[in-house]
Image (cartoon, rainbow, N blue to C red; front, side, top):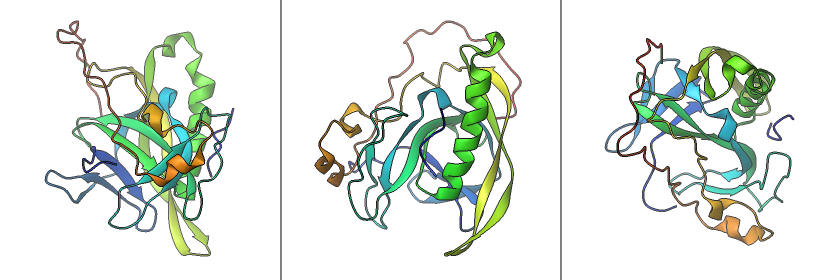
Length: 211
């Protein structure tokens, strides 16, 4: 099944790709964006959500999430674009678990394509219960009516066990999901709550990773 994509005062940690400049950023401590190198990271595609997103300068993001990947919510109105919300994890590049969300058509197309690879490989016995490792290996220049933008090259390189610090949970709140009332999209999206790991998690094996 192909992906159909192509708040409060608290801002959750995030990573984002700027399709206009071909640069990656994370939210720095104290606010503001900090540029980082092309990352390698775990991407929780099993819990990805799609929907309508609107990003406006100086305002909290707004979003209306689809009830399911194969059930599209109606458009809330002007300025909303199809996009996705998903959690990513990298102690090396992100400092831990962060949210990744975008309504850029170029980023969405890159995610859609890597999701197709994930979906094909997820059912394999050796991959069950694991999370895909995604590497950004470059970018393709894309010319459109807005000039030259960039599409990140995302490659599913391998699969890894899910770290205890990376909960198996959606990045969105149930209140953000469309239930037949598109007017709910006019409200800023609340910060998603990710349940913490158990107080005393079982010992985790130590892996040498590139993320």
